[in-house]
Image (cartoon, rainbow, N blue to C red; front, side):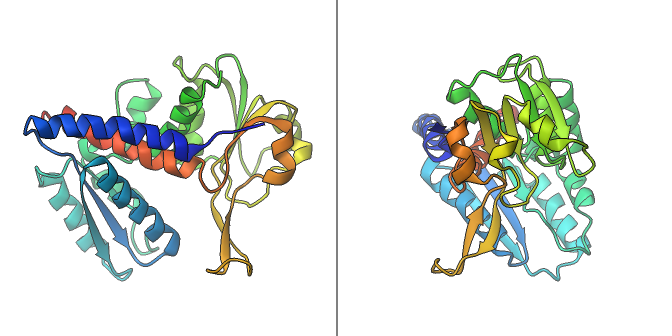
Length: 292
C-alpha cells in the first residue's frame, strides 16, 4: 500500500505556480488576485478559507477575505458578487459554500462571472466540462485528477465507482473520469443513496472515490485487493483525545481498508490540499485568459 499524499503533490504544484508568479513579477506584470467570500462562522469553512489565503501567500498571489455575518441578506451578497465581477484587479473569487438557508446558493453561483468562477461551479463552466472544452474545472474533482496523474495512477480502461452525486464533487468527477482524456477513459458508476447492491458494485471497482459524507462508510469487505481509493470525506467527529475535541474522519475506514489497497489517500492530507492547489491553478489561468 502506498499513500496518495496530497500535501506532497500540492506542494509541488505550489512551487510550479510560485515560479510562474516570480517570473511575472520580474517583468513587472500583474500578480494574480484571489478573493474569498465567507458567510457565517462555520468552523470547517473558516479553516478551509484560511488555508486558501495561506496558499496564496506561499505562492505570491494577492488575496482578500471578505466576511459577512450569517444574517447577511441575499440581496447584499449578490451586490458584492456583482462588485467583484466588475473589479478589474480581481482575477478570481469564490463564495464559500454552504451558505445560510435563507440564501439561494444556485442564484449566487449563477451570478458569478464565468471568467472569474475559479471554483468551477457556474453552469457555463460545468457545461464546457461536459463537452470537454476548455473551462475552469471544479476544484475538488480537478485536484483528484491531478493527484492521480502526478502519481502515475492508470485510469484508462479501469472500472471506477464514485460514491456520492453532489454537484460539487461526485457528478462532475464521474464525467471527468469518463472523458476521453488523461486521466480519464474510465468506465464509471455513479452511486448514491438509491443504488442497489452497492457493496457488489464497489467490490468490482479498480478505483473507488468515496464522497458521501458518512465517516467510515467504505469498509474492508467492500474493497478488492489492489484497489485505488480516493477518500473525499472530511467529517468532524467528536474525539476527547484531541485538544480541540474533534477529529477529521474520511468516508473510508482507513485502518482496515488500507492493507488491501495499492494506493489510498489519507484524511486529512489527501484531497483537501489538492482542492486548494486546483483553485490556485484556476486563478492564474483566469488572469491569463482575461489578458492581464
